Image (cartoon, rainbow, N blue to C red; front, side, top):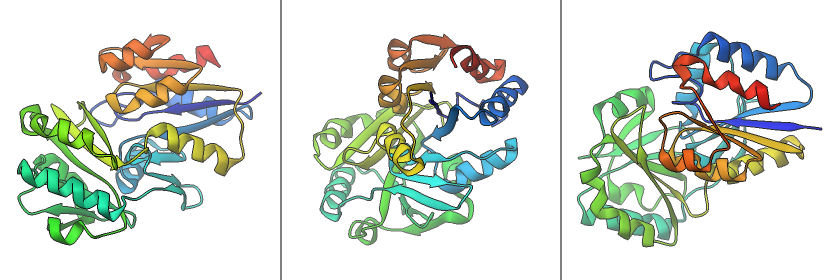
Length: 267
């Protein structure tokens, strides 16, 4: 019997300082040592952002990144899943954003992040992109065929709320708008159509050759909903997105209190 444990990172495994509680680290070590458990991550983070945060906490896990747009096995440095925007769909997204005077950061499959001039995002977001950040323009990005996703992080909801209905109406885009613990108060992420964490998780199962008998999912945000809904046991973090809490079978304590270790009770 194989149990797949899939977890969000920010606000679930670690707190806003990117620090794991000692009980969480011990639980991760325990699960990784078991032959009947497969442990993986599903996060909104991009590849290099996840890599640096893993390194700070002393472990690496196979990961679905950018909310399902790409899957990366850090152990073998290989991509196991990738979906990019159709160029026509991408142009439509940029048309909508431009009509509301919004500018995103676009994430490319080679790890670069292209920010349009006049970008609508937080300084913290731009600073966190480090050497991956390059400046570009909507006309230069829109024709590309290697865009995995786009985001505007750490902004006021009033900036993006007027555009949400038009974005959601587009057939070629998945829209994730949510209260963000890492980049407060609010963030918007845009992905190619039908890209969710669930899609990436299923791609990992195919890649790893596993057919789990049970799936346990842990998350706290609006971008975790499909993942929690697919799970046999859904664990949501106390104080997280209400939609995640409503889907959960159990509520766990926040990461600064080591709530993640509760997963051991359900293996």
